[in-house]
Image (cartoon, rainbow, N blue to C red; front, side, top):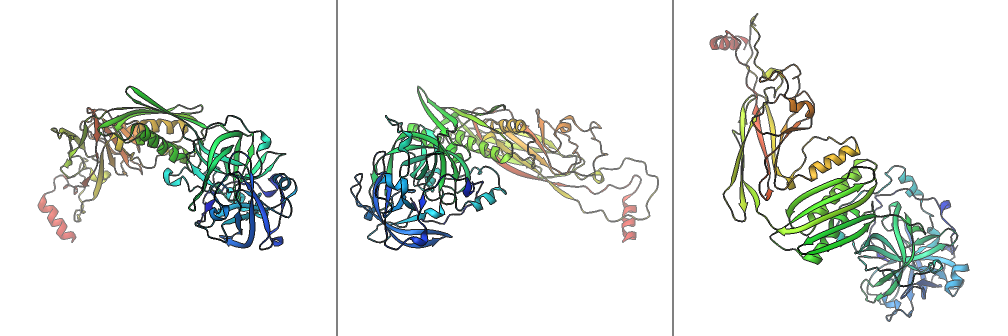
Length: 626
C-alpha cells in the first residue's frame, strides 16, 4: 500500500512479454463489474495465514494513464481491533487479492476457481469517515499485460540501474513497496511449507540482509504452483524492469492501527525464499526457490578495549545500494559509540573483485561517525558502475579504530611570489600551516617553480641564428600574450585529480588509480601544477639540457611525478591537453586540512631587437612602417 504520488519511470529495463508470464487466475473483466458489487479479499493480519475481509466495488478512476477500481474495504478480522472501514488500506496490504463474492466464498475456493477483480494497491487518503478507502489495480491489467513499453525501452538502456546518491532515512517508508524499513527479521522457529505460500501471503523483499535488514514488505497476489512464479504488490516497487532482489515469506506480528498511515508489523522469516526478477508496471514478479547470492559487507569498529562488528549482505545495483554502503554503517556506529569529539578514526577498506587485484584504501581522518570509510566505498562503487568495465564484486571489509584526535594543521597562508611572471623565470610558492586548536607556530615551506621557456611556442624563444639580411620594415611589437598556470595545494582528504578526462583503459588500471587516489595520506600535502596545452614546440630544446627532462617522457598529458620538489625547468610537450605536475611534500605529524587553489599569470615577452640593431633604428623602422 502506498500513498498516491507522481511516479516517473526513469530507469526501465527488459521485462518479459505477456506470453512469457506464468499461468494466471480467472479474471473478472472491468466491463463486467457493477458499482456496489460485493467482493472479498485476503491478507495476513496476524501469523502466517491469510484472512478474509469484505470489499464493496465502486467506479473506476484513471490515474496517470492507468485505471484503478475504487473500493471500500471493511470487516473486523481476528488480528485487529479497529474496523477496516476506519483504517482503510493498510501499508503491507499491497497485492492483497480481491475476488468476486459471487464466484467463491473461501480462500481455497477463490484460489481454485474464483474470478479475480485485482489487487489492493493504493491508499487514497487518511482519516476515513466513509466512502472509498482503497484502490484496486484491475487483474486484467496485471500479469504482464502492459510490459511492452518496458521491453522496448530496455533495448536502449544498460542492463543495470545506476547507483544513486539518496538519503536512506528519507527513502525508508517511501519506496513503492507496501512497508519499507529496517525490520528485525529473525528466522522463525518453524519454517513454512512451500504450500503455505500463496495468494494473500505476506512476503518481504530484501535490499540488505544481516544485522540490520532493510526490506520492503507486501502481499502475494497470485502464485503459479507449476512454475513457482509469484506476483505481488499490484504496483511497481521502483519500476526498473529486470531486477534481482531476494525475497522470503514472513509472519505478521500485528498491525499498527492508526488513522494515519497504518501498517502491518513484519515478524520472523518463515522460509520460502526466492528471487524477484521483474519490477513491472503493474506488479512485481519473482520465482520461489531461485536463491541469489549477495555481497558480504563486514565492518569492525574498535574502541579499546571494546570491539563492535556489523555484518550485512547487500543487494547490488539497486536504487538503495550506494546509500546502504554510505549511510548504514554511520547510523550503526552512531548507535554503538555515538559521535564523540576530539577523536579520529583510523581505517582500512578492502574491496574484493573476482579475479582482479583488490582495492585497498587506508587513511586517518577526524571522526564523523563512519562517514569517511563508508563514503569512500560509495564513491568507489559509483565510479565502478559508471566505468563501463565488467566486474563481479565479492566482498567489502572495513576495519576501523577510534583514537585520540591528533593535531590538525590548517592553512595560515598560501601565495605565489611574484604573482605574475614570464617564460624562463622562477617563482616561489609559499605555504604556511598552523596547528589547531592550539594555534601553535606555523610550519612554512617554499617551493621554487620554473616557468617553461616555451610556454608560448617557438615565437617566445629569442633567436640565436646569425643575421644575414635585414628587413626593410619592422611592425610594432605584438602585445604580450597571456596564459595561466593553476596551482592546487591540497591535503590527502581534499585531493581532487586535475588530470583532463584521462579515463582508465582497463579494469586493472582503474583499480591502480583508485588505490592511488583514495589512499592519499591525510598527513601529506599534495601540489598539482596545471600547465596549459602547448603547440608548435616540437623543435624547441630545453635550455638547460638540450633535451626534454625525463619525468615528462612518461607523463605527457597526465601526471608528472617529482620526488624532489626543487626548481624544475620544464619543456612542455606539444599536446592538446594540459600537463599536470604533482609534488608531494614530506608528511607532517598528524592530520593536514588544506584546500587552496592559486592562479599564476604568465605573459610573453616582446621579441628582442635583432643583433646589431639599435633602438633608434627600431624606432625609425616603426615610424617608417606606420
